Amino acid sequence: MENISRRDFVRTTVCAACSAALCPIDFAWAEKGFSAKDPHVKEAYFYKKLADGVVQCGTCPHECVVRPDKRGLCRTKVNIDGRLYTISYSNPCVVHVDPVEKKPLQHFYPGTRAFSLAVAGCNLRCLNCQNWEISQTSPDRTRNYNLPPDDVVLKAAEYGCKSIAYTYSEATTFYEYMVDIAARAKKVGIKNIWVSAAYISQAALNRLCDVIDAASVNLKSFSDKIYWDLNGAHLQPVLETFKTLHRRGIWMEIINLVIPTYTDDMEMIKRMCGWILENLGPEYPLYFSRFYPQYKLVHLPPTPVDVLREAEKVALKEGLHYVYIGNVPGLGNKTICPNCKQIVVKRRGYTLVANHMKNGKCKFCGTRISGRWES
Image (cartoon, rainbow, N blue to C red; front, top):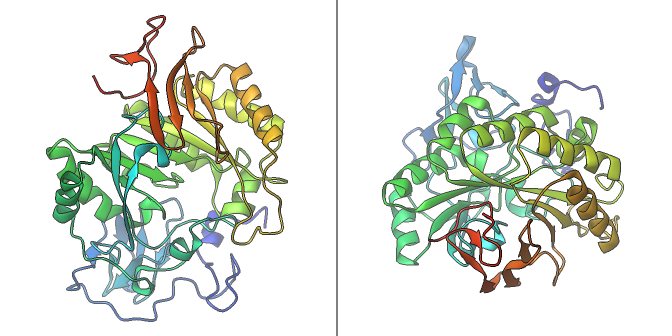
């Protein structure tokens, strides 16, 4: 498995019978007929036509080659009459109003609300997925809302949300829906948040960067082998995503789930932090998040808190300014000024209880705190 190529990978999928990742069956099943006239079907923004009615998706690095009446690995892209369509349009299966801190984003308008939605599907196969009931299925197998882009924006405004978050499943797999919502939201001053594993093509990412304001990105590992074994993806495209977000001026916060026996190696964490410092700088927050037994990794224990604290020390020693511990009640709820070490933002859970900043600066010493803040 270590040496399997990306081209080999796009010919595999999750077996509907055994749910085993990378089962070598005829990938891209399509048990149901779809019509381009369906209100939840829209032509994909990134693909090219090949011979004999075959198409190749360009939304993510898998570059799935999809035959007529079949689907891509994400289960949301379908070849209909020699054209590639998304079936994840205006049909979210989850709609919530959340505190923005839940994304998690600690440095992006803290204390505000995010109108959050998800459509079923994912282009990864994470063994630890906590939302596998919606990520490892398809939009035609979930109970959905009928919520066109204009209605999403209206609902977000109605509920007083500062932002719209594309979250819970993998937002890249409902790319067209996300981009259309975000473009409309941007026109009326509502911010857009991409919550993602960042496995996306550069062409699709650059278009997305035109309309989003922030990204909460899961960096699954700093080992390509572990990325493949744990998530069914490769590391380098994710690193390229980070570079593009940085270059395009998109605010981002980085989450690293520390999984026992997979991603709890301190030398790997040190290399990861060094790469972030060298390529992105010290200003973007990094979260070391606690793993709890989920999905296909129920045999593993939760991450020891001492391991998370050790990772935090490694990151701070490497020179990152804002390091958080996630998924541990009582920890990771304070933003500390990197200069005077005073608490500038304090939270209880997802609730903001103290904000000692003025115009984005520490009230105690005047140091600018990286992020996006209310005036």
